[in-house]
Amino acid sequence: NAGVMQNPRHLVRRRGQEARLRCSPMKGHSHVYWYRQLPEEGLKFMVYLQKENIIDESGMPKERFSAEFPKEGPSILRIQQVVRGDSAAYFCASSLNGQSPDTQYFGPGTRLTVL
Amino acid sequence: GENVEQHPSTLSVQEGDSAVIKCTYSDSASNYFPWYKQELGKGPQLIIDIRSNVGEKKDQRIAVTLNKTAKHFSLHITETQPEDSAVYFCAASSNTGGFKTIFGAGTRLFVKA
Image (tube, rainbow over all chains, first blue to last red; front, side):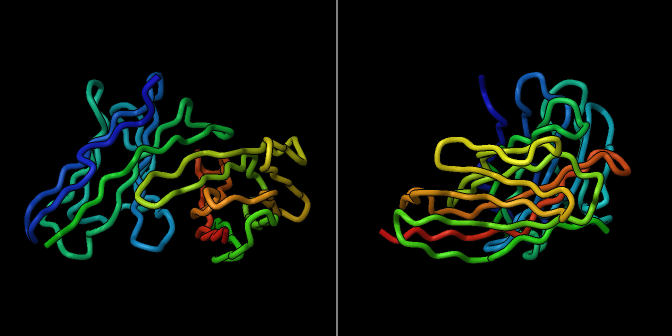
């Protein structure tokens, strides 16, 4: 029973390039959450998606960041024109039904480095 | 907005001693409280959780207590081992304005051998 999968695990981009981070939820889960974590800091909520819908994007910057969770395939967090401040670990989590109590299970993360 | 406060931010204990991490939450409608352990370079892993209709839950060396009146919950680790060294996050979930999980800022636990 595979857990949440994220790829790539490490991503290096130069300033101005695009970064695409992928997340495959646990089998049977249709709710996906993205978090950002800076070194030595906590988890900052970015966006919550259900299949084909964005439920809550209150934590995501309005510019350069977008997220999708298509009917088929993984969820994608896209960062356009990356800047050094985007360097962080990005974690994806998934859950079963999107209503508390509902457990979020995390993936291993993608560590983005912007040169 | 809603928030979860977690203390202490750093905790150092001797191997074999107990460790206690405390959290308070602001949304009285919170009904689910998971705890996660994050090791270096890895994603957070669920270690124990408690629902609002229960006051205490135990799983081997770890236990969690919940005081709904005070909006306070705690993680207790007994007989600590060096492999318990990690960052621990508490969280509180509710359906207020839609499903939301708010995380504490984390506690870095060091267990000295």
